Amino acid sequence: MTSPVDLAREYTGLDIGARKHLERLMGSWGMLADLSFSDLLLYVPLDQFSLAVAQPGAEVWPEGEPRQDAGASLLGLHFVVLGQMRPTTSQTLFELDLVGQVMAAGELPLVLESWRRGTIMTGERPAGMEEGPVRYQCIPVRWRGDVVGVLSRVWSPTVGRRTGGLERVYLRLFDRLAAMVSAGLYPFVTDEAAIEEAPRVGDGVVVLDADQRVTFASPNAVNALHRMGIVSAIVGNTLASLGVDSEAVVQSFEQRLPVIEEIERRPDVMVLLRCIPLIEDGEVRGAAVLVRDVTDLRRRDRLLLSKDAAIREVHHRVKNNLQTISSLLRLQSRRLEDRAARVALLEAERRIRAIALVHEILAREPGEQVPFKEIVPALVQLAKDANVSSEYVDIQVAGDAGDLVADVATPLAVVIAELLQNAVEHAFTDPEQQELIVYLTLESDGVELSVEIRDNGRGFPEGFDIDGTRSLGLAIVRDLVRSQLGGSISVRSEGGAVVRITVPLGAAGDASRP
Image (cartoon, rainbow, N blue to C red; front, side):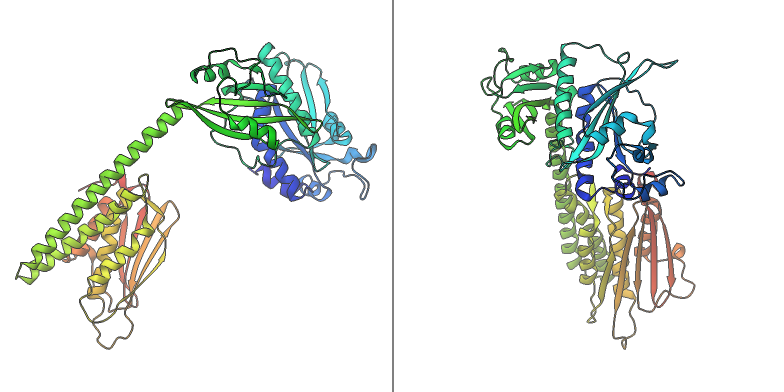
């Protein structure tokens, strides 16, 4: 499905400023749909070249003739539906998605007239056999004085909610905002992106006059104010006189721009306010304040933060315990005279350190995802520290595994540490060899992770089979990859030893454990 942004760029002659203006409108017009209890459609005229691409053989207006001249030249004009918004406060009239649909101007007489005249037009389609009458209000969308599109409001007087006091206030608010759209004052230039937690019409609406006094408060807004401890009469007072210290209202009136603010009335009550100035004849004549009680949301946020802190503390303690065990093994190895036993303890100590690295990252980062690229340098250093020969081994890293869950990152860290050390210790036996290099490559497409460790050493012995290996380290690698990571491992000799591991991301939790 082509996005509205792509449609505007590919099929209209609008410059980037006009396209951004329409994007801002579509980012904030949920409020318009809710206030009007109507479906909204945004129509934009196609240019001649784009029309030929979108509808081959379609008639276009004569080349060079002004598009906004009345007459037959406009009959070849076509519009594309750039966006569609359904209300949450009423029933929609459109079950299908109309975005991308191209229609001739003759099929949209009211849209055409509004675009040509640059004025708000209202009309009605007669009732059909199976539906009641449908009404239309077409609002020209201006950008820097030019009409760049038409916002069409579509509703049926026989469908949806009955008109009462609240509905009349909402419709008047919509009319004021529609006039701002027609004048090029709405959407505001600061409305670049919708705020995820921004209040909506259904959360609560307070209407202010030019003196910042409340002229209307919806029931949900009254409930939110009551939770803030405001029990006195609301209508006729300013929010400041009611004890709501809101900088949003003052700044919005002064800056002539929307301002959002979160107010903590008491330690257990938090309300989000978004003040939208209503501008008429160049002056701020009032404001619409959307109110949302976010107390429960913030309480959940605090609980999540507490839980996250507790989880990080657990990882921190696990890391400390693993480091303690690592230190004990190192100390014990120094007391052993048997070289084989000492080497075994040191290898166990190194594997524990690889696991501790993962918990160290988890103790710092929020969540259960591990940025694996932060672990790799430490794994490389572990392998270098294990090199007891006098020859320098260069370990080169390429690619990134991305963020991995702990169930994948922990065994993978042990696997990479084991393979790197194995390459450093056993790959290079030729004393005449000048460059000793181990390559670590990680690739992830979000579905599958590939890890390849290659060296330029002597390679694997002829006929080597990892399933029959007597090396404890390679056996550990094989079992971790297959049982805990649910992946596959292959080995070969190609200018040196090559080990390739493939892990299906997300499958580790489903892999069978031995």
